[in-house]
Image (cartoon, rainbow, N blue to C red):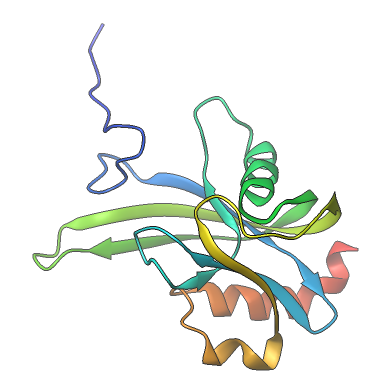
Length: 154
C-alpha cells in the first residue's frame, strides 16, 4: 500500500490538496454574527464563524462544533447556502492556502455568546455596517445572498 505523507495537523500552509472548511450564517433581524479571526491566515479579519472539517467528521457536525468552539453557541444547520473556494497565493504564485468552503444557514438553539477558540471577538453586526469591516474575500457576497434568501430557511 502506498504511504501518503500528510502535513502536520495544524499546518494548513502549502497543502497537497484543498482543505474543506465550514461556515455558519446566523442572522438576527438586520444583523449577522461575525467572528474576528485570532490566528493566521488572515488574523484580525472578520468572517463567518467556522473552521476546518476533521477526518471522519460529518459536515453538519463540523459546523456545530466550530460554532460552539468559536462563539459558545449551540446551533442547528438548516441548509447549505453556498460552496466556494478560497485560494491564497504567496509572492511566487504558489497556493499557500487552499480551502473549499461550505456555508450553512443555521439557527441558534442554545448557549451563551462569547469569543472562544481561534477568534478575538464575536459580534452581531448590522448589515449596513458590514462594508466598514475588514471582511475575508467572498464573504460579503455570501452574506448578502443569505439576507436575500433567508425566508427559504425558516
